[in-house]
Image 1 (cartoon, rainbow, N blue to C red):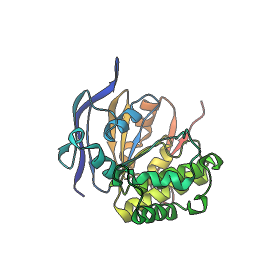
Image 2 (cartoon, helix red, strand yellow):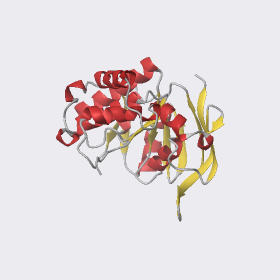
Image 3 (cartoon, helix red, strand yellow):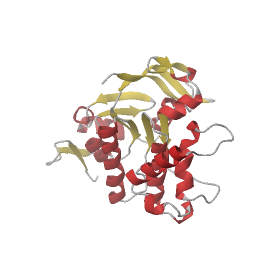
Image 4 (cartoon, rainbow, N blue to C red):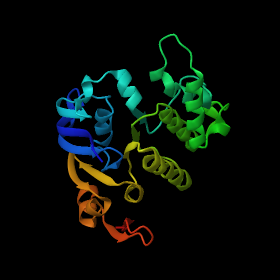
Length: 260
């Protein structure tokens, strides 16, 4: 896999509130990268910088060898798609209308969607098993259904890189597994590079190829799940006692909490 995205000495944040400092790492094409760390460690800020939403205060981000922030927004919108933790819609759109919004980067100003746009949207809904929700209003959908529709919208952009900010937050275990299994399949079959924030360390262990653990706005550790998810590391960063075993089926680290 070739180098796709590279961060070098990245620092960024908000006016009067720096968050990330001196962050450097590389993302390979086709990788399934998990970003983990405690609340306030800079995970969402990092994802916003990577997805062209928050310009760095210092350092650089390159995409295919070019400065990320020198690339046009239209090209970024064709190559990158972003799935937030939760999405609020001001109007009562149908699921179909929401998914079709993913074609915006390909539609000229004042022009309507083409047959090709509709075909791509329908295929994204088929992949995400949301076609049956096509005519439902977004307000009528459950949290899990709505999140699947948002993922279908992102796929309709036909992205090369898919960024997700805790897409399984507030969902039951069934929807968590369904969403992450879909993302893993798309990653392996479609060669979509996936960059995802996860709070659940066991989900990160099972689905991610590589992990970046943040703490206090800096990279604490990075590597394969077995290299990062050690009990000493988790206890140091999360300030809680854990027991780390191996999942008997996958062989990946499995974290158990120890009640104080």
